[in-house]
Image 1 (cartoon, rainbow, N blue to C red):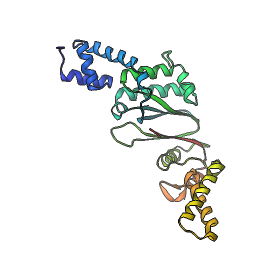
Image 2 (cartoon, rainbow, N blue to C red):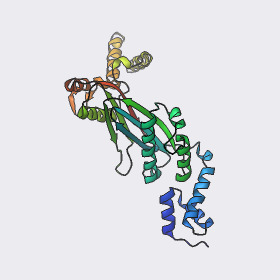
Image 3 (cartoon, rainbow, N blue to C red):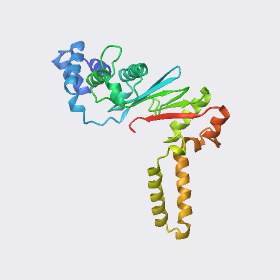
Length: 275
């Protein structure tokens, strides 16, 4: 029987994020040699990457970085919250967002092909993460924005890294308002900056649903048009950032808050892990 203790298993699990049974098997195979066990897990992890391709990655983190008037953000996903809150996974996110700030690629495919400071591609770094952490890891979203930039990261649980992130591009520097608006977007999840950005086909679909709903509710035929238009107006306000009631002062709209600060929102990105 290999010579190792429960503490050795715990140490190996914390270092590799592999399952307890996998750690025990690796230590058995390595005859209790910790370093060799780490290597065994890495090798088996590399061999098992393709087996993990179909697994769901509903956990992870959102990480962002701002330098000057450029902001970048990415969503890095994994399978379990155990890995998501681990130091190795969080460090991987920090390394990747630093690379994103350097290469500034606005889409996932281009970013995966980009070179890191080590000379490896981002995809190769992700594959190594798959191997060492023992789970499927993937980048779901990336964003690059020019500012001035407002940034807000939100933790949905104190023991997890940020699960929600927002970048806001402002027309004019207004640091406090930029962060406040980013925080508002994190909470209220608007889809568009203003009503002009709402696609016509989306509005028409909502109009159809509103009309069918009103009929199902038994609303009088003569009032249908007014009821439907009222609901469409409400929908547009709900999905348009500038028309939403501001989170910190519901008596004002986001538009009014921006006007008072002498700035405007040009664009924004909102990521939430798993969505």
